[in-house]
Amino acid sequence: MRRAHRHPEETRMWMFLSRALRRWVIAAVLVPLGAKALGAAGRGLERRSGRTRLTRGVQGAADLLGRQRRRGRR
Image (cartoon, rainbow, N blue to C red; front, side, top):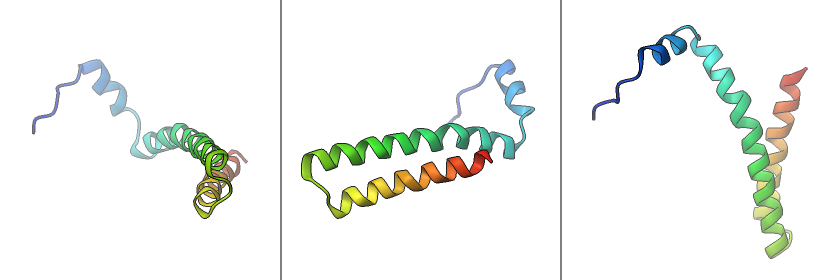
């Protein structure tokens, strides 16, 4: 499978970011979005079917992601 060729400007931009910085940028965006999505899914499931093991698990995962995000801000 061939990769699509990127524009030279785009390649140069990412070249200057270290792997750790790229990982941090991705995590800084995806973790909060994941927490919000899991929280919304858990609340929606709970509205439909009541409090179940699944809804508690989904909301617990959302809380865990939210705590990790808040802990990282310190």
